[in-house]
Amino acid sequence: MTASCCQLLYFLSALTIATIYAQPIDDAIEDNGLSNLNLPPCPATSYEISQYGPETPLSACILYDLNPLSDDALFVNSTINSTNAADQPSFTEVGLVQVTPSGCHNHRDGANTAISKLNNDNDGRGVAIGYFGTTFIKFRLISIIGGNSNNIGNDAYSAVHEEILDGVFQNVNNVHFILGSCSSASEN
Image (tube, rainbow, N blue to C red):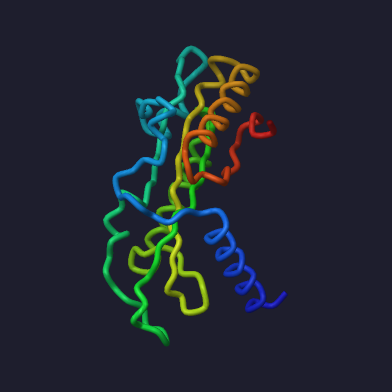
């Protein structure tokens, strides 16, 4: 495949994702159902949690919620040079969830870095899609640590992992994609 063919496939995929699965941004203070999960914030950093040994219990917690609804860059009022410069950029949020056991800091932090970078592209407007590049998507990453699998064991962790994912898909309105995890529980 040529480079231009790959770029075209990338933009078509992004456009499909944005138009089929994502929802427009309505309310900048809405959590889209995340609070329904009743999960507390994590008690330490991703790396610190990854160092927990088998003697350290950890309940499920939210490590990251990179939410473009609360991102000031979302409200940047600027235009893009295009044939139709009068069109204001439009924004669409694509929701992602990631559930990992305590020891997977590299997977969690890599996703955080990637989503932050993509959301800050184009002067904070996100990833440009469409023919004129005046439509943008931003990603919401909800990164949840399901617990310390070293403490509770893989079978118990697998059950928690599945329960959390089910809860996210039932309660958080626009999450449609699961980021892979380093957990054997991701096979469920």
